[in-house]
Image (cartoon, rainbow, N blue to C red; front, side):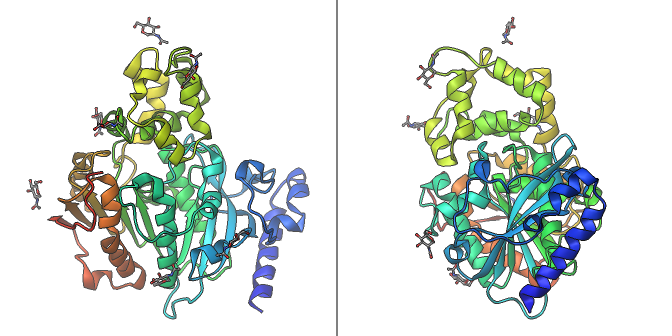
Length: 449
Ligand SMILES: *[C@@H]1O[C@H](CO)[C@@H](O)[C@H](O)[C@H]1NC(C)=O
Ligand SMILES: *[C@@H]1O[C@H](CO)[C@@H](O)[C@H](O)[C@H]1NC(C)=O
Ligand SMILES: *[C@@H]1O[C@H](CO)[C@@H](O)[C@H](O)[C@H]1NC(C)=O
Ligand SMILES: *[C@@H]1O[C@H](CO)[C@@H](O)[C@H](O)[C@H]1NC(C)=O
Ligand SMILES: *[C@@H]1O[C@H](CO)[C@@H](O)[C@H](O)[C@H]1NC(C)=O
Ligand SMILES: *[C@@H]1O[C@H](CO)[C@@H](O)[C@H](O)[C@H]1NC(C)=O
Ligand SMILES: *[C@@H]1O[C@H](CO)[C@@H](O)[C@H](O)[C@H]1NC(C)=O
């Protein structure tokens, strides 16, 4: 019965949507397989998946509209645990240049739902890549949960930890939606794109007919690269999705100023982050991208080929390939590349938090004081600026550990906080007004990284 109900609702939805399209577009959307769940046994990399593409005419749908919906291929629900089924939703969104675009989210359904209300965790995975085939909708298949945390394997085990987080969230009865927020151009650190795609993944999940609706409670969660997508969603919500209620956001390892991040990680084990932070935001600006490529050296050990190879790397490969390198060595005029007017403009539009809006739901920010990738000063600035404008923030600065350590050290506090948001007990358990800023000492791991 449930399946039938679901099919009927989606057929109706697609027919209604279809009537508003032009005849050319409708010819492509009418095939029922476009609108209905089709289960295939083998997951395909997005670049080779004919269904990881927007149907013709998608531009005329409103942001958040579902363009395709299918049961996720293979046995992702078994890999995750606590899960009854998993769906891929391809939906309309808006890119960094405010043009119509699209993205895919993976929606996990809990095997046991909450009896009181339905809850959706919008989980932004720090997938740090410029290769669309490393998007979570596909990369999540390639790892098994380790449950051990990054005992300084750090960035290399991010996918493993994400599966554990998703399994635990499902075990609490939450639905979990995991967007490929960088979109089809794998625009890493393209914050406007990422914020929009995150918001629209929530809209699409709520209207999927899979158990959620507009009364569901919604929380955002993201660490590091995932904090960018989550926070920008929060900043854009009031102007881009005024109808949407987001009940709270947990932001770890906050990346409030990407330009600073580029300088700070350059020449360190995390140098690959700088490659993405320099190249990612210009991918959707063709002139700026062309300029960037024209500034790359054509000979020597740090050359164009080596730099652009990052576009076909997983984060694991990227961290290894650029380990301890000076990324500015790839450019003819070194760090001056950041001051080229075209490149700088694309960066400025996408790199600084707090300029697009004030969070109107509670926020939990957790950060290592000695974060070596994204300095604590930028998070302090973020919190102070929003507090002056009336935000409700709990900000915990941990005296122990570095950037990747805090992903583990902050985990139990983040989950407890999210739980209060999703079960509606937040104002009983936390200060629901103004800002609470405190130093904490939590040392589950302390590798300094
Ligand atoms: C998932 O499927 C793969 C291959 O199709 C198989 O090797 C693996 O054992 C399955 N995992 C689970 C947990 O069922
Ligand atoms: C299922 O959820 C419970 C409760 O959150 C958790 O303890 C358990 O580890 C989860 N199992 C998996 C496989 O994720
Ligand atoms: C961001 O960091 C850069 C590089 O350190 C700095 O010049 C700039 O003033 C910072 N911007 C903001 C808004 O904090
Ligand atoms: C990488 O750079 C760090 C300093 O950022 C240094 O401590 C470390 O020894 C370097 N590692 C290698 C293998 O060169
Ligand atoms: C590098 O800087 C020099 C001197 O400022 C300038 O003449 C040259 O055009 C620059 N090269 C590039 C590729 O921008
Ligand atoms: C470019 O750099 C790579 C190493 O990253 C090297 O193997 C290759 O020979 C270089 N190409 C040129 C033209 O120097
Ligand atoms: C937290 O510690 C810093 C030093 O790292 C100190 O300057 C600051 O006053 C402390 N903040 C609070 C709220 O205790």
